[in-house]
Length: 335
Image 1 (cartoon, rainbow, N blue to C red):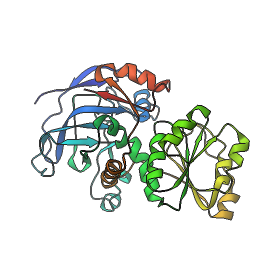
Image 2 (tube, one colour):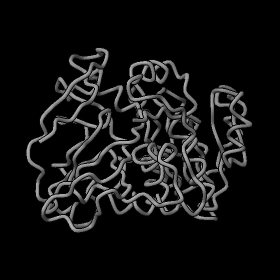
Image 3 (cartoon, one colour):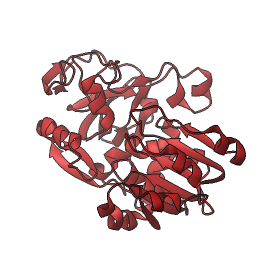
């Protein structure tokens, strides 16, 4: 069996170095993907630095993968050699628990991360259970679609789960790697979209992406004027905010949903929750079925990530740019 070549972190926060491993025999339910593109997600940076305390070294990061089917296991009949496919955050699940049986494999207690305790997509190939390998619609370009496989589904899933529709008024907090995709999907669903950003310079871009309204969240007066106007607020930022003011922005039965992780605990008063039947929630990626649905929606409505491309060999350079927020809005490595 040919070895898989990639770029691995050998210690917490270390530069990635060339690395190869023997993947062993292809499992009967596995697909091997020859990688053409892999997005750089902030989760990769957290794993490289071991911010979550779950990394094992050496490991090859990367979980926003697009490529061509190179080999299929003996029990796989759903893919053809050469077919263009994608792989996101998750590469396997138990398949038999309550959550898997309900089509919510992303909640499986035995879920396997594509680059957690195994090797991911900053490489020439990767393997995964066929259930988590997703066909890519012809209308979508590989570079602009790779980030949808984690970043895209992370924002699409909560919009769908919370029933966003043409009557909805949606706020998107943060116009970055996640937020710029969230604005597009919320607009596709017919919602009135309000973008919140600490950067006033992003107003034109937010409106071009589909936002109807823009609020500079550094201006407390502008923030307070949103009181009682939104049904759903999706927070994509990894920074502390005045969450009480965002709760006040919700209409009765509204929800504040987190997909970004602020450094401090989120504290809000209980009264707005009680008085208006408001709630706080979160969302972890989405199931393979929901990813397929998202890609179909993206293909039909022209949703795509704004990307900057780097050769795979320059992954370290790309990671540094992402760390410094110098990429608008997603970095993608290409083989």
